Image 1 (cartoon, rainbow, N blue to C red):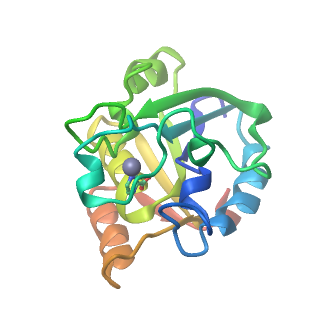
Image 2: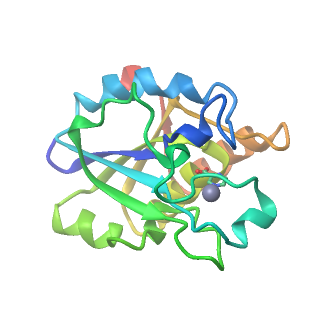
Length: 181
Ligand code: VGL
Ligand code: ZN
């Protein structure tokens, strides 16, 4: 459908096993995302894209510094159909978890100009940037879906993933299985 987009949040080397801020089993999102891309005319992605010094690194290990290998897409992600990349977390005074805080391009305007009404959100991490992006999208009136098999959580606290799914559901985000697409 022309009014749907797949939105890939922060599938970057530093969030994968071996990376600076590795998400457990984060690499497992790659295969389902590669499969999902074939179902969408519009595929978009965000990158966590931090300056070398930012207050964000008071909370987190240094990760996804702009232009570094850690901030790059993993080799096995099929990037050929990604139409636009939204860079976020680019400032040094805030976290910039949501893709709607991208600074190279305004995501909300881009979606509206392109007639996108439904956003299918996948990627990393469920309890931070996926959640923040999905909640912002729902708040801006988009119909939002999160594909369960194509997201993974940091889980600093063991309940973070469960709580993130609950919070998203309460905001009207639909948590779906890949089989429903
Ligand atoms: C993220 C923690 C710190 C994310 C980014 O992409 O979910 N999490 N920076
Ligand atoms: Zn970050």
